[in-house]
Image 1: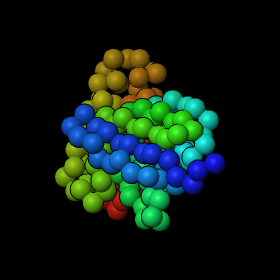
Image 2 (image 1 turned 30 degrees about the vertical axis):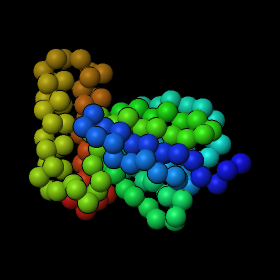
Image 3 (image 1 turned 120 degrees about the vertical axis):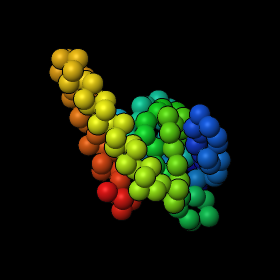
Length: 138
């Protein structure tokens, strides 16, 4: 088995990363997971959180992602993010914007009267707040 794999992180605006990685820690919708070389094929949805790339050279890169999809295979991993920013680019204003959008989704879900939508929106809001807390922006 190879020690590294190809990893690509893409958002609608741009390609954020295309590197050789030892592992990628992914905030999956059904729980966090780590993709490594030789991983069994998997497609998963993402929840808001911090994506960590452990690069082949030993360094790490962290990205804030708001959702999307990851395709994992033995050869590599591709992550298609709804929104993604390197954590160094996330300002308090950006973090507050993430939370404000999640609060608006929760308000709209409550108005709809569908409890399943309310639960999903409340989870989204909690994930956005936790992401800001994780990178030191509340």
